[in-house]
Image (spheres, rainbow, N blue to C red):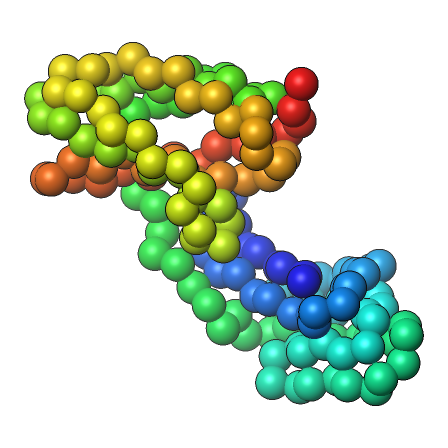
Length: 163
């Protein structure tokens, strides 16, 4: 599948758009206009969906040119204040987490860009220093959430290569 994402200058995910099919999708070029319209070119195998258009030509490889102007999926912005810090960020897989105000137990959650929960770790009351090993994940952008019964805070982490 093909995913287009828009981020704010501070790295906050604003929207995600999905396209493609089941057999292979290969974007090859992209143009972004001043008004935010995105043109994407490439090829796909057998069938693909772009917005509400289903391209099903039954051939091995077909080219596409598609236009994205309105996102169909949006997410709530992540607040700029956080209850924890993550370093180094980006990292090759080992992150150190410093939590604030851990007067009650909580949870540390890691989600991928599609919102899938990849990891869950319980955090004990007054535990304020954690090490998180993400070497088993593919390079990419992930969202780390620390939540208690009263609050929730999310930071973006970047995994740029496994060693």
